[in-house]
Image 1 (cartoon, rainbow, N blue to C red):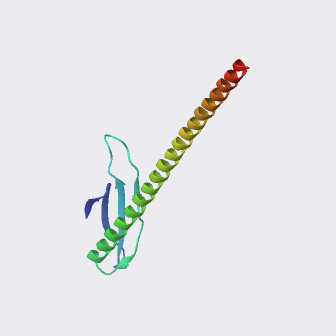
Image 2: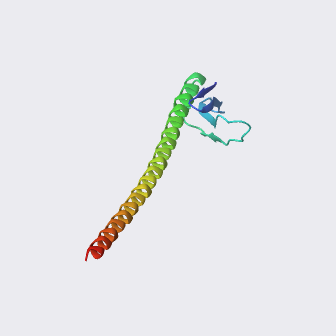
Image 3: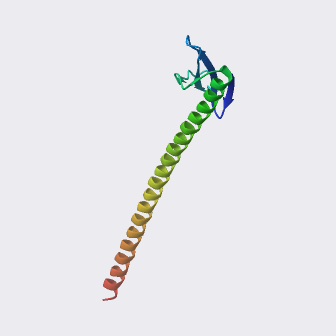
Length: 120
């Protein structure tokens, strides 16, 4: 069974073992953009079942959960990076504004001192 979920392509299979059991397996690949090479993730044997349909159903559920976890982790990392960049930009802007205010205050104080000195 092959299908796409989120931005992943999933291939679910059941490996039939010599003892008669079916082992759930999944191969997950991120959907490529343009002609990029993307690595795949192989689950290995997830669990054993007495019939193929149950094994494939298990592989499907496992693969979707794995994709959700990977996507959530990537979203959190992107959000953290964006927050860090925004904080850095805000800090830089605040520093620039403080420097500008200090310069303006120094200029005003110097002007006031010059006026006071000229009036004496």
